[in-house]
Length: 184
Image 1 (cartoon, rainbow, N blue to C red):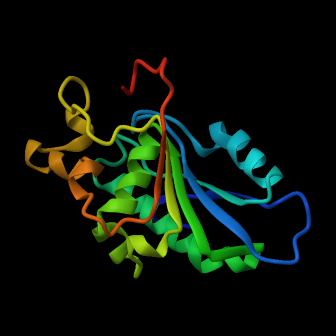
Image 2 (cartoon, rainbow, N blue to C red):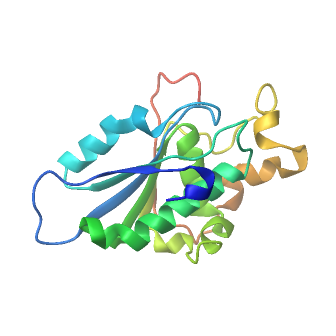
């Protein structure tokens, strides 16, 4: 989807044939913005496809290859590509969801709350049917290991999805395990 940055995505089509267009989920992997690959989340794409969803698991640049907001911009490009190509793979671009785990959930949440990212791709957050976050940081501490990832302190508030919640977002489903001690 972004050859200029060497980014790809994997497409998982529903296993059962459908006579109508199916929902689409664009999923971003976790890894603390420093590690992780789309291949580690193959199981997510496969499971969603088994449930009748067109699943698209996308790469994004991690640190040190990119810093904030580069990985969110990558995510917005993947979402725009998915919307533009959904019908080709049997998906319904009107039922396009963005999802992620951990760092990927932060990316998904910013795409759904801070309209600048989708606007750069000719979209707006309300073009999304919803956002799904799994164990994501939405209001988190950057000090203590993530300063290089998120750059100058002045831009840290822009990394917090909670700072952009103003009522124009698509529906959100945020899921968090009670035993999770990494993202509390």
